[in-house]
Each structure stands twice: as structure tokens, then as C-alpha cells.
Image (tube, rainbow, N blue to C red):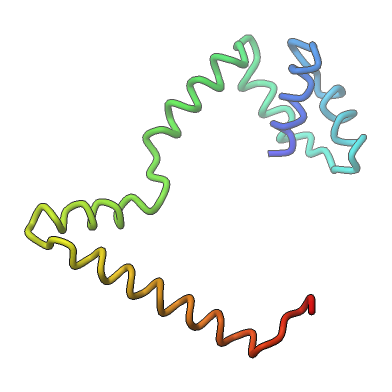
Length: 114
């Protein structure tokens, strides 16, 4: 990721085609180690390609990746459709109340900043 970040910084700085030395200079300026193999791999993969097109293609690929939490939302959405009514919502409210009560008991009457 740091090699990609260095590449993007260089491109944003106006260097349309950064070299390996450019990336090493950027990484060295923040004290990060430069891995020659990763730099060369990145440069061969992006050679001759427009960075905005690469980012757009990456966004399209990420759009199809599940981001977690979707199964819980689908389960809650499916429950009312199957006649579950408000039962899941009531259970969620009860759980929230229990969690709040546990948090208030945890501080035992004093605060770190009192």
C-alpha cells in the first residue's frame, strides 16, 4: 500500500509517469523502506495506463465485494416479509437498553476526568 500511495502522490504532484527512483525518494522522505520488487511490479502493471481509469476500474471491482453487515440487514428485512412484524425491532431495543445499563455500571460512580 505504501508503494501505491507513493505512486499516487507522485502523480498528484504532476509527474505523470513516476520512476522507481521517484517512488524511493518519496518513501525515503517519510522513513519508509522501499521494496524494489514491489515498486517494479507496480510500475510494470500501471505502465501506459491512465491513473483515473485504473481507479475507476478498481471502484467497479470493489462495488461487487460484500462489505460486511449485509447479511444482518437482509435477515432483518426478510423477517417482516415473513410475518415477523415488530419482534426483531423490539429485541434490538431490549439489547440496546441492556448494553447501556452495563456501561453505566462499569464506571462505578467515578470518572477518569473527575
